[in-house]
Amino acid sequence: MTTLCAYDLHTHTYYSDGSLSPAELVARAASKGVQVLALTDHDVTDGLPEAQSAAAQAGIVLIPGVEISVTWGSQTVHVVGLQIDAAHVALQDGLGRLREFRNWRADEIGRRLEKAGIPGATEGARVRAQRGLVSRTHFAQFLVEAGHAPDVRSVFKKFLVHGKPGHVPGQWASLEDAVGWIRAAGGQAVLAHPARYKMTALRLKKLLREFREQGGAALEVVSGSHSRDDAFRFATLARTHGFLASAGSDYHGPHNFYLDLGPLPPLPEGCIPVCQDWPETIRG
Ligand code: AMP
Ligand code: MN
Ligand code: MN
Ligand code: MN
Image (tube, rainbow, N blue to C red; front, side, top):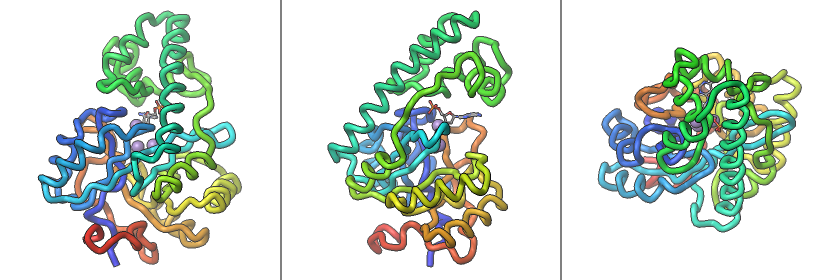
């Protein structure tokens, strides 16, 4: 059974908040030994055609994916869709609405930062958003370059999270809708980097139960933002809640603090990999 080591099922390009083009991402992944790569940009699938043809050239398998922004209770969580039919209408309608909210939010972040004495942030973020999808990452890049904080990590803490001047509360997709769109598009829904949500055990259990009831397929057990202990913890939770296990770097580009591309640590013993029912030609 595969341990997903040569798989990377969570990555970004400049179609969302990554810094590489799809062709650059695929070439880099292939050169570092990745054999099965999912492109999972935030709320957009426009990078997939370029990634598909680059993967065919590089001789690796490209899994069409997306990472959907979800509001669950008062919290933002991310749901990755793997093996999606990106042309599916309900999925694209849903993603389109999320991008409209993003666009409005970008203006609102700018208005709030301006009130806090920082002008020009929306324009600064928009020029850094190379394909038009504006993320807080682009605001962070602008704010760092304008000298408001030394690095992206501290700029988030100072300006872009709950209780800070550039934070805009809002409503992303519901968990039910995100899972529904992914399933309607023939894909598998994966709860992304679950250790990042810092939930109490009780709340996490509630999230996992709901995600399972709604048809969620897998937990991202191995992640660029998980420690080895996190991986073991979520491997156990995957088993007890009946989820498959996924693995992804959450790569955003060479300048990001997350993990580089390349073979990931193996899934802990006892995990059932998310690819278990994928065609033999894809599983490799
Ligand atoms: P958004 O979806 O526009 O709200 O932006 C979320 C993105 O910002 C995530 O996908 C990460 O890439 C990035 N991000 C979130 N929190 C942090 C953080 N504390 N430090 C650096 N990047 C972060
Ligand atoms: Mn991101
Ligand atoms: Mn994420
Ligand atoms: Mn991601």
